[in-house]
Image (tube, rainbow, N blue to C red; front, side, top):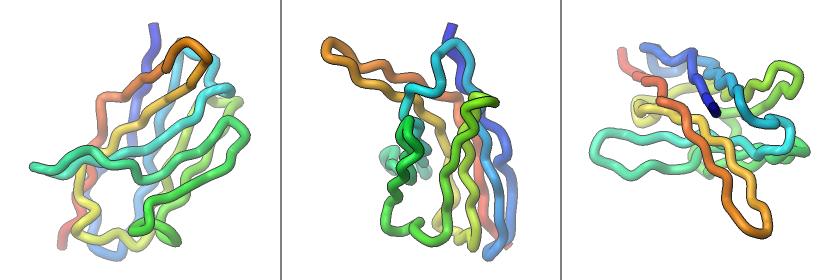
Length: 119
């Protein structure tokens, strides 16, 4: 059974930092690309950051320079370090593991963790 468990969300003041973690089990973590999405109330889920199995990274423009995605294959965990947080970063953040083969897309999601940026 595949599980992705996020942690690290919470309430933080504008300008503050949080580090989200996502622990994976039930998959060969090292061969999956990992992604962090956010979903704000009334909005569609959007991709914030992506890290490949070889640790290449890519970011949405609005988080470049503020967020850093990283992975620790020994711990089956992906992280999202979020600095200089803004109120508009308030959302539920979801971890996603994805892998494409010639015949299928393997796609798994965590349950989400709430991040609230407010004074």
